[in-house]
Length: 384
Figure 1 (tube, rainbow, N blue to C red):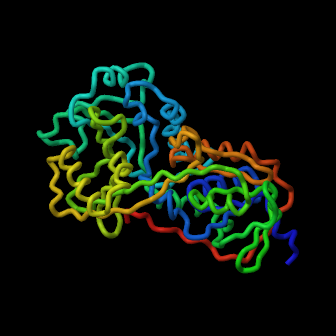
Figure 2 (figure 1 turned 135 degrees about the vertical axis):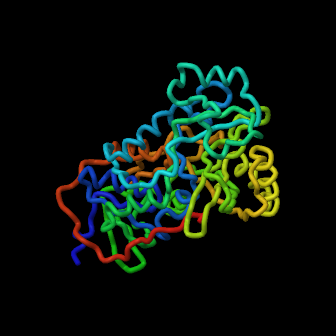
Figure 3 (figure 1 turned 180 degrees about the horizontal axis):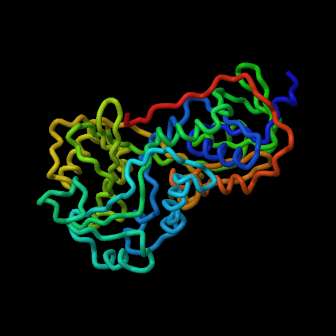
């Protein structure tokens, strides 16, 4: 086949939220773009996320706005537009696990934070609930803390990946690529099948996998990993719960972030937050013991005796910086004919997609036609 038939506007490497979102944005704008995934779609960081689309309130527990809280503030509204089919990426049909998220404390919030949550600075993003409006999980006389409702939402990540895959499935392939070219100027990618593909722009969107891609191209782009030790609790008697448990005396971040998921094997709570961050130093047995203790403190009225606990580890990949702190924004930078991107968090994917589009040259008039490669399959979430 003529090599010209294998030339594209963009070749995207990586089939998580970053790669699939970029593919959707570009093809919707007329770019002849394809995506190549080495393993399975969503595997890794995307399926390790809790599906939380948040507006940064959990970054404001000091009672002040921060760079992180403000950069992310409009994201729930942006995602709701996508879910309604009125944004650059159509997510109609994606399953929403919860249209609201909650924040509760083991005691009364500080007066400073209570005043901040009621201030005009974050008006419309937080509301106080009375006992009559409590979700089922908090309908216990043993709960004597304060409960807030946030304008955040939780998506079913398998449903999200399926919807993105379905729209452009003819342009999503399975393969392991090798770059041909030099730093900042890739000439082509070679697949193990012997097929050679070339593009005007190459987009590295492989999350943790970007590290090897960047190294092979000898690019000087720092990447950092922030490890987590997540906990999964399985039990049919568990109530649906989507909430941050906050202990303001000991931390300025959620003590535990809880989301609820269901699959053919039943119902699961997926636990993140400070529990997952501090858990990297604990063994699986120690992390499970610690999680049980934490749950018995923050939600003591729920019976965990028949629940099954397990853990798994995951590394969050993002752009590196001198402070080693989490970046406030997605990283999207062009280096010659290469774009490198990390969304930083699931909720920032639309912002990342906008930035990718801004760095693209105009699409070429030709179309490459079909190529003979296997299609990438969809992976399985770690909490399944």
